[in-house]
Amino acid sequence: MCRNIRQLHNFEPPATTDEVRAAALQYVRKVSGATRPSQANEDAFARAVEEVAHATQHLLDALVTSAPPKDREVEAAKARARAAERYGRAG
Image 1 (tube, one colour):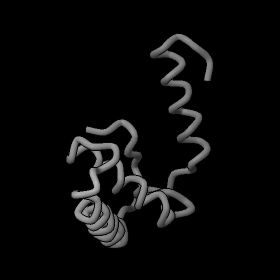
Image 2 (cartoon, rainbow, N blue to C red; image 1 turned 30 degrees about the horizontal axis):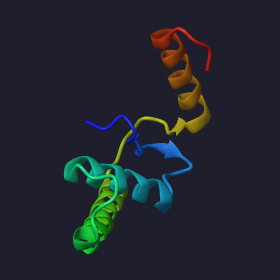
Image 3 (cartoon, one colour; image 1 turned 135 degrees about the horizontal axis):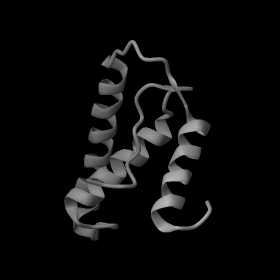
Image 4 (spheres, rainbow, N blue to C red; image 1 turned 120 degrees about the horizontal axis):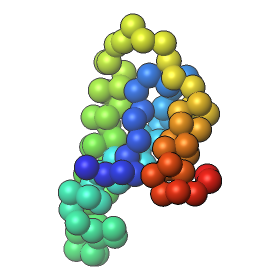
């Protein structure tokens, strides 16, 4: 759905509050169709971001896995390699 929303589950160290909020903001922006809400919708937009962030944090806290945690740097390197292959340029 949103390419800017990244997987947050099963990383070491765990996702930060800022990462969870950034994902929630991207989600609300996508669903609402607005990068910045109008003044009339500002409160509803902010409330939605906080509620989605709260629900996301609860989800992350409840998920369990037997897979070993992923390393952020290794996953970022893989993503850069995929992008370089896809777009034909070095990252």
